[in-house]
Image 1 (cartoon, rainbow, N blue to C red):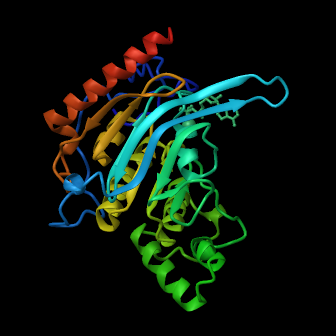
Image 2: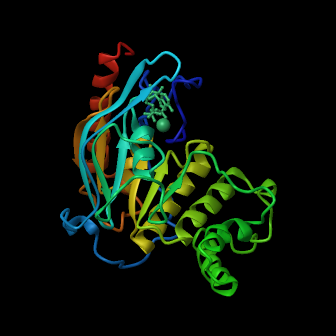
Length: 313
Ligand SMILES: Nc1ncnc2c1ncn2[C@@H]1O[C@H](COP(=O)(O)OP(=O)(O)OP(=O)(O)O)[C@@H](O)[C@H]1O
Ligand SMILES: [Mg+2]
């Protein structure tokens, strides 16, 4: 049985892969793991020791509310989030569907205005999107008339990077996401996984300080998703970017993260903050470790509690 069977509320839930009504999927059994294509042997030390005061991102009392322009009705989405993310840290957010995860991520991206508190990236208040933050959404958003290479260098062109330098940088990231050989393909000729790799390369090539991932593999099939998780792990171990990722997959969050934030039901608050004390680089059999399974159970129980509060379990 695949461990990453997608079981969102809005999809049919396979009987053997019970997700409950939370929209999160907890694998029924921890199993084996495949080789990590990008894993470095003897990489740099984990950023666990990184000082939080060396913050890449700082949220203080952040609230987000949407106002319906016709009715004036206000929908509070996020309430009083306090969070510091250290440079080079990988932090994931999990929570019920509709609780406010994307709203918070979009606020960090500068795409959604906050209605209270302060949100600071690299010491500068966030008011709009900027080259210091790159976002990868659930579905690839590639320019169909541009090749893989053309898509990856697009952001560099906008920044006025000379063509030769742009091509050199793009080639390195195309290799990193294992797309060497298809750089002249158009998006229509790529699989979903390949397209999402292009999206990752496109985000990374601009060398952002913070990488924001909103269910980056949510639209992929189970096997491709598992492959991409391991590739992302390898890419992160190579680049050591600061990452904030939203996911519905508890095992994905544990595999990749230094810390996991469990959001409450809407308006989202931080219900729990869980430090993932698993070794880095993550061993190939990490999902089979008892510590991994214990974390899964703990997070799953927290999610179930919030789902009960919503009357969905
Ligand atoms: N642009 C918007 N205008 C009005 N309401 C919005 C807007 N975006 C989100 N919302 C509302 O804010 C709440 C939180 O939405 P959000 O997209 O942040 O949830 P989420 O946790 O990312 O959910 P999912 O896991 O399903 O992606 C929801 O009630 C949603 O309807
Ligand atoms: Mg979302």
